[in-house]
Image (tube, rainbow, N blue to C red):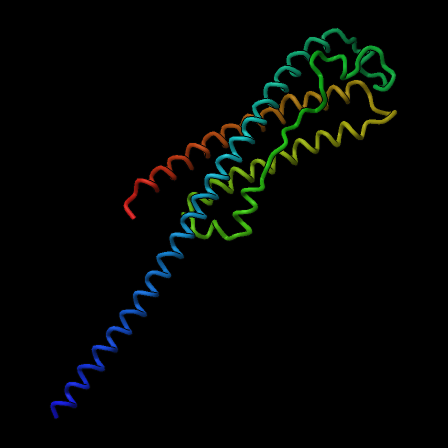
Length: 210
């Protein structure tokens, strides 16, 4: 009877050791997995912040350029008569876009979205708070809108032909320096707000007890 009890205790003890070992293995595995996910999430967040900073830097150059063209366009259009403005654009000596001081083309920003797309492909956003994902998605959606809007203006310029009037080309440049410029300024504010929002989120996350 005593041997039977000893065997029971022995087996129970061994079972507890095995169970504890399994539990500890699962716990360590989950802890390492969570740590790996957190590290990847943090890296992706930093990549996105840097990508947004780079996009904003290029955007500010476009805003400055379009502000310059806007100002110089006003100067040159004041010198064009109503008679000349209704004439065909090609071959017209009264106005050509190259006559606008500082003109160097449409001057649209080139945006990078590699970090954002990479985070989507690797399901990184699933590990982030909904508010953060929403803010990031909103900023990149506005980038997409700005790109499409700018491209539509570029297409208008490329579609000019022998029937295009001077007033038509002036209208395209005015669209670039009004609606597109306003879109760029709105995007700049959105990027500025998002960058600060993400920085504060990362700071809180690092100081938060694990």
